[in-house]
Structure formats: structure tokens, C-alpha cells
Length: 132
Ligand SMILES: [Zn+2]
Image 1 (cartoon, rainbow, N blue to C red):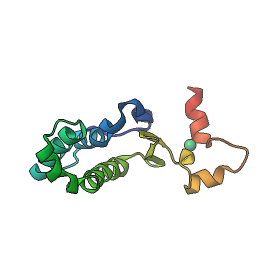
Image 2: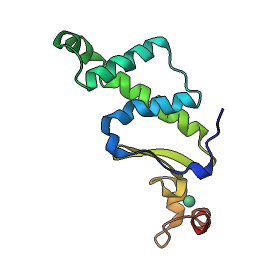
Image 3: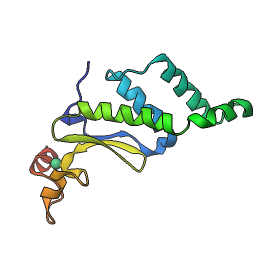
């Protein structure tokens, strides 16, 4: 299995893909070993058709109940899975529909971010990375 390394910091899912990112994060997580059962696979396929407007009115009516919670739960679980593989000191974060792997010093509300204080925008490690 491929490891997630510091060198992979940055944008993983671009915001211009819009709602597609909700399932794309699941596909990425799967490529790193995230397990999805057959029932979930079928649900995701249905969800894509539903979200893309490809369902008949009758199917649509039957599907409404399962959205958005079930899909959001899967998407969140996939994000948590990727986050558990993030290198030490880094985290995956959603911001405005974009998924980014970033240093914890850049994650608002983190201890590392609080430690920066008012005059620094990044930790020493990030400053070091930027020089190369
Ligand atoms: Zn940093």
C-alpha cells in the first residue's frame, strides 16, 4: 500500500469538482485501503445517479430518505480514514468543498495553530519546507 507522505501536502480535491468530491474522497480512501461493502457500493452508485439527476421520478421518491445523511457519513468515514494515514503533524481538512492535506499549524483550532501566535503564519517546519 502507498503511504501518504509530507510531500503530498496540498490540495487533494479541487473545489471546482463541486458535489463530485463527496464520492471522490471515498474513491481516494479506497485506493488507500478503505473498505466499502457491496451495499455501500450500490448506494454510492445510486447516489451518483440521484445527484446527477439521472433517476426517474419514481426512483427519486424512494431515494430521498437516504440522502444526505448516509452519503455524508460515508464521506466523513473516508475522510477520517485518510486522516488516520496522514503523516505526523498533518491533517486532512475540508474547506469550501476542497480537501487539503496540510500541516496542523495551518489547521484553525489546532494546538499547533494556537502556538503560532499573532506574528507567525506558519511553523518552522513549514518555513523550512518552503525554502526548497
Ligand atoms: Zn506547519
